[in-house]
Amino acid sequence: MFKIIITLVTLLFAVFSTVPAQSEADEIRSILDERDEEIKELLGPEGTDYTGEQREMIKNMVNDIIHYRSMAQFALGNTYDEISEEEQEEFVDLFATIIRDNSLNRLEIYRAEVTYENIEVNNGSAYVETMAQLENVRTSVDYQFERINGEWMITDMTIDDVSTAESYNRQYQNIIRRHGFDALLNSLRNRAARAST
Image (cartoon, rainbow, N blue to C red; front, side, top):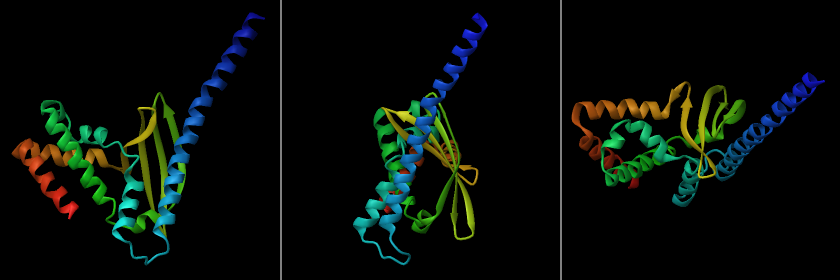
């Protein structure tokens, strides 16, 4: 009898422990679905000419669930902790400006049909595997999510097995090794200035 009770308790615990993870997976999928629908609606039919206001709205929809500070910290590596708070703030702002500007390079990619391959949630982190298909081209697009201040935020995106954060990390570390952090910061300032014009 005691063994039966233990078994039942174990089974009940297993069932109920999967409920939060499942509901969180549904929440994350809902966030991505709503974002995808809003972007597609704003894009309209192919060949549409976009006003500056529309482009800014698309940029916000694409990027507002990205946690730039987390991605920027990973991209800068140990150097992030070695620079001043003022430099940290400027670096994160410049990094965000560049990422946001890059998101408008190819607006047609946001017309792709997205299917969900897998969503894994574990202790405030989640990994989402999706497949985006535009015409006959299929591209794997995966997201690393973290729950930050009660909200699910993207901290990395992996496109065709290439991590965004890791790519920037390799670029930035190479510049820092060769020329130092100040050279990197000046380069980012110039790129951000071009993005703002």
